[in-house]
Length: 261
Ligand SMILES: O=P(O)(O)OC[C@H]1O[C@H](O)[C@H](O)[C@@H](O)[C@@H]1O
Image (cartoon, rainbow, N blue to C red):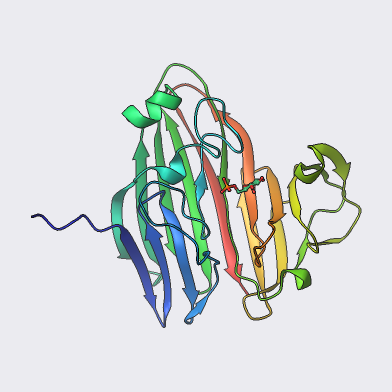
């Protein structure tokens, strides 16, 4: 019997700095910097190749949230992606890998459009760089939502602070989607939180992640930022979102970088 195709890809930069990607959803399931894990994956995560992996960095596409024609948060996180370019060391010493998802019968059953998603990851000394390129070969404009649903590891979510939200309006999903404006310089997450901050700046600093460190998150062509703390879940997921689209026969690119400081 043929050996089952491998389902995880490891980018190894040396010095115990690695990034592990599960081809199911191209989900980053581990990011270690000097052997220190930066991401949270639930002990209850199920790796059955069907359900979304609970934690790490799932990719949400083409729909953020409930979806009338398919599962919540779309299909990208529950499809098996192809490894387009195996991990390769760049002249800088960084390690790059690329993954691809094309439309298929399963995606067409929910979203009847042709597309090509290319996910490029670069593992740097203390940074992880993500670039998603959405190519629309078709004649119709694609409308979609895209997120990197990052689950950072934090020892005590109540001590986390997130900068950059002051003045932004937000949708509070814990209050039936009511809109509010943020007045705080730094946002803390002391209670059940499920918010989408709109038109946020390009950079956020999140304090007290991992063992009291800071995380810098930078994003390009990603409009909003969500913050969330779920009941019974220690760590704070913080994620970036975009409501956007891609014109016919064109490509659009979204980039995010997280840096452990
Ligand atoms: O449970 P999932 O389908 O993975 O969704 C996890 C969460 O995703 C986002 O953060 C939404 O704002 C939340 O409302 C949702 O609970």
